[in-house]
Image (cartoon, rainbow over all chains, first blue to last red; front, side, top):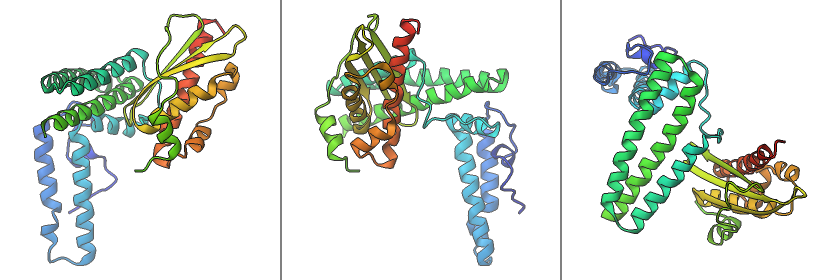
Length: 177
Length: 127
């Protein structure tokens, strides 16, 4: 098959280059591409061809994972337009957002100390709502307003929430098992 | 990953944990956060009439290296002028704590926190 490693992930799956995404469309497009490049199809091929197929399959999987996750998709869209989200180096988040982060951490710590799984699950639900609201704002910033700097801030915020989600999950796990 | 002795010392006996009244005129507050690891750091300085930092407090949510970096910085800034505090480099923090490369961002966070605290203080005083 013809496989262009230079084309972006959206083109690879024949999807419009935007944040709003039809998850079902992505899934079926990925299945089609994955089937075309599956290493099993190249079982009797030469080494070079096998290697190429493996690279294509890896690339397709990576592209799928990137588009599937709202955070990774937004980061990737920004990267395509030349905006680095600087999640490793940009430490200047809005003060109220950071205050809220500290409060989240405190609430998680308290619930964990109290062995209160219900409270942790409640926090997880609240976090989920906050994340959904940020994702909606990302859609507006990227697809409608073309506000790339605003979108980069939203990506950094979502990254914090992703970490919180992980911590809540770890806390629940530590209490249940 | 093994922490250095210096990190463990600050982590187990953190210096200057706590906070000042944010509204106090002599207090500068810096809040920073690192998206990649989710660490959040609040660092406050108390400045006397001669422009010298006489006390500092911090509160950090994060890994041992982030806590050690902020603890160390609160010790270092005491007795320093604002300009001297602004010149603290993350490389000095990383070196003092023997941070491995993957933890350098913790020292960057501490440098940014002290800079933010000094800026907040200067802003309050119209400088």
